[in-house]
Amino acid sequence: MKCPYCGFDEDKVIDSRPTEENTAIRRRRECLGCQKRFTTYEKVESLPLMVIKKDKTRQVFNRDKIMTGLLRACEKRPVSVNDLEKLVDSIESQFYNSLQREVTSKDIGEMVMAKLKKLDEVAYVRFASVYRQFKDINTFMEELNKLLNEK
Image 1 (cartoon, rainbow, N blue to C red):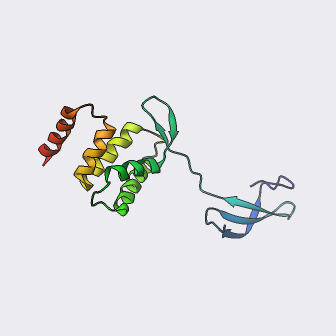
Image 2: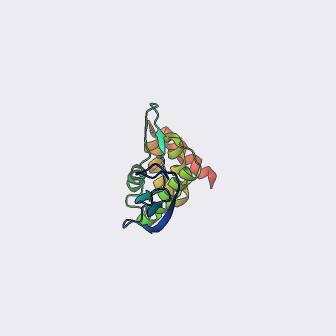
Image 3: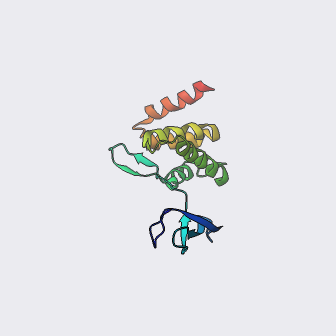
């Protein structure tokens, strides 16, 4: 760390403590060149996860959009909000842990459907009907038949 006063690049840490919000560590340092003290803050670098939409535009990943879709699909279904939170947490952590900085909206949708199918099949069909943009009853029936054949 370069001293802000003299530019010397060696110092010693005198005190370390977390900030009030627990989002960073505050460090008091003393320059070994001029003996002046200064404060630095250390925080985790977070790189945003970007979503590549169908039209090739990019936007920052927003877990609330997934939650909104799931709440709509699970309306009047015996699925707790806690279960939905766990599902969204699982999806979010899976993408962040993959170390990819960009993911397609298609990948997100497919993962949501795979996890929702295990949680509630009716909610899965509701979600799939919007996500896959079913055009008519035949497309809807095809998805239902796939679901029945898997059993």
